[in-house]
Amino acid sequence: MPGIRRFGLPWDEGIDSVKTLRLTVDARHPEDARYREAIEQAAEILRAGGLVALPTETVYGLGANALDARAVGRIFAAKRRPAWDPVIVHIAGPVSGNAMLAGLVQELPERAAKLAAAFWPGPLTLLLPRAATVPAEVTAGRALVGIRMPAHPVAFELIRRAGVPVAAPSANLFSHTSPTTAEHVLQDLDGRIDAVLDAGPTEHGVESTVLDPTQNPMVIYRPGAVTAKQIEAVAGEVEVFRAPEREAGAPQESLPAPGVGIRHYAPKARVELIDAALEELPERFNALCRQYAGLKVGIMLPGELAGFQTEGAVDFRWGRWSHPEELARSLYAGLRELDGRGCDVILCPLPPGEGVGAAIRDRLLKAARPR
Image (cartoon, rainbow, N blue to C red; front, side, top):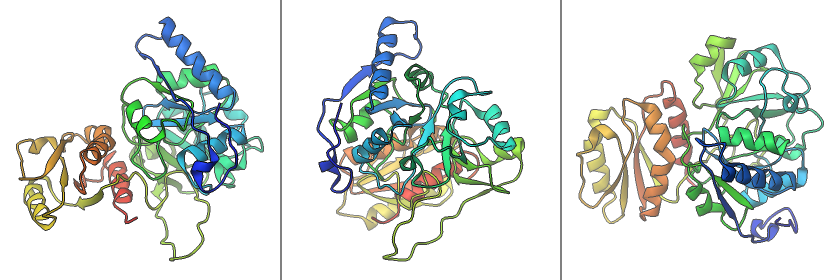
């Protein structure tokens, strides 16, 4: 296990370099002996206070025993994540009467119970009144803890076998592009964590929806694959959180929920957003390529424009504009690929904000924030 010498800045002095195990599993064959051995090895690491990157249906998460403050501290050290940014706790088991959930919260409001019944296991995080058993490090000292039950069978089985709730933000360095494959995890965290459980690419490609069902109306702090319309159909009125502008030089307060930081999900390259209709994009791409002459330009290219070319630019063949779930699934992979190809600037269209498009716009607006 990696040992924490001290928790604090500079981050790299807070962890020891370790050999990161890559445990490969095929989620289609849980009966396979190698699958069971990999899950048990990862579960043992979690029980012993170590760090395991695990696949979920959204992105890969960096997991630790949520009830072990020292283990949670290792997440922050490995990611270089500031203490004011809370993390989500993942649970497994039956939705109704869940023992892990009961040990993490003071109460389960009626609306939260309805939402859990409708969307768990799945990509919805509920902010609930935390019990004293939850370390303050998990919630950045806040009174609510974010909890979800992942639908990915590997994540679900790992948590079940570990027998502990698992705190798991995305398995990347803080503010970087989130990982949707084990290879992405290793690009950021190889040598900083104990293991990555490799089950292939994730399904949704953007993080879970984060909802506070204790407010009236309920508040979405981070849009995701579970949409506002779906939530309203189950539990009533909901509104989307708007972060207030922080004055320059003002101290950073703990965030009200995971995923509401001003700048997140960002590649090394500058992200230039284009808010335009599909048919207007070729002209906009050409104009911006001329503007950035002398720099290496990458383009997140919608599938409907597969024949488009601009001399000197490189493109990532994104999903179809008419299928936002495809755009979400390959968003982070595209940003990482263009970064890896040495782009200085990435031109990225903003899709319409309906459904999961709201989540894509949220991630891109944060990724494009100045450093």
